[in-house]
Image 1 (cartoon, rainbow, N blue to C red):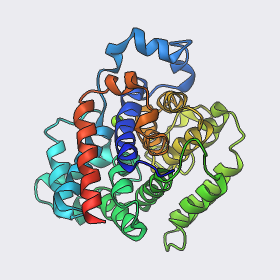
Image 2: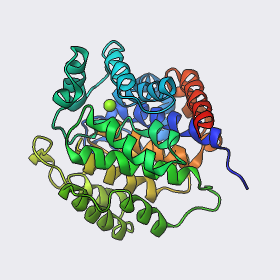
Image 3: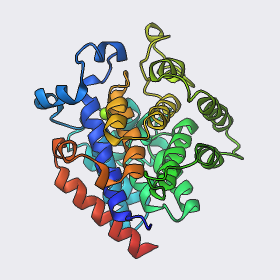
Image 4: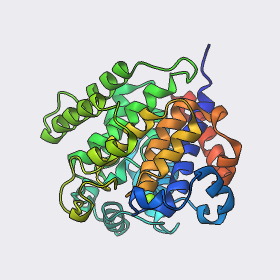
Amino acid sequence: MSLDLLDKFQGTLISVAIGDTLGCPFQGKLRKDIYSYFKDFGEFIEGYKDVFRTYTDDTQLTIHTAKALIQGNGFHTDNFIREYVKWLDDPPIGPGWGCISSIRKLKYGIPWKEAASNSGGNGTIMRIAPIGLFYCTNLKGLKTTAIKSSIITHSHPAASAGAVVIARAISFLLNKDPITGFSIDEFFEVITSSISRSQEKIWEEFIVLLKKLKSNLDMPIESGLIKFSQAGVKSPYFIEEYLGQAFVHPYAISTVLCSLFIFLKRLTSFKECIFELATAGGDSDTVGAIGGSLAGAYFGMKNIPSDLVKLVKNHKKILKLSENLYNAFTKRF
Ligand SMILES: [Mg+2]
């Protein structure tokens, strides 16, 4: 059976927005506190739709990334900077420090090499999905573009490593059918290879953590999140009071590990997967967005319940943008 790539492009971008929208009210909350609000998350959403009225910076920046790629029919630094500067007028919803501080400098014409913050936050990964889609058949281009798109705002190597891993995971999942599934061994081989043979010490440390994640996939979600939600976290992201709790820190490595973990634990249903992601605890909207990109790339638009799509603000525009990105992709490759 041949896979419908347009369906997968749309599924990926709309799922970033669904995960972000569902996770938004739970940003900065402990997982155990989130689960005290409801018995059934689906019923909770139905009863309190107004709570889920917006997505946040994750979807906003993903939209700007897609627009920049379409404008340039691929990556061009100037287009990316222009789109990210436009985000300041959206205005940003719940932005991270790494993004907002560097993009404000870009606005005033400071060259990106000076403007980029030395942040290892998850800000470059939350916006990476369009790059995983557009370069899905050009893996060399995917890696270099994931890095180039990261370093204009985040100079820390953990941020670019996370961006490469998630972009590569998306391109892998686009080619998989949720009816037949995929090999977990192959998945980890592909994502660890994407950042192997690097000069960066933290990229090697990240590979060790990815292998550790793979060997702990039989853990319950809560325990896995406690184990990985502070993995690789460095100051200023470390919050001591959340030590030993399921609270995903907004750091590149911790967020990528937790998003991958939840996604891989819930491969049988899009709805169950996105519900678990958005209620992760801590940076819940970003885990929803990043994990959502993986779930959307795997399940595709046709497996996403329409009530979840309709919950997303501007969902028609996001679907149209996905189509435009797909058209740009078919024109280029
Ligand atoms: Mg956010």
